[in-house]
Image (cartoon, rainbow, N blue to C red):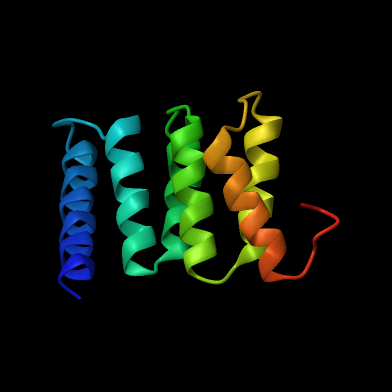
Length: 119
């Protein structure tokens, strides 16, 4: 429970950072987005993780493999295996190479739906 509260606090701080960006103070970067998506996973906010991934791209910040892994993990934590596989497809189409974690998460997603052939 304590961990979830800390994650939610981290998301509040990220929201503050985004507001400062709107006022021209400073902007979130790939590292702050990755941290926010990890906080989304911990707090069970898979939809927010996907929204952050989209916001990142819209802001001209290129996601990394770690970014995609954080989004995939958030989807898996939320029981959304199909969304996790969709993010994996996005990673592949972006030209990035999946890593061991990415493949492990994809196998977990397929296992959740009994899609062993896809794994």
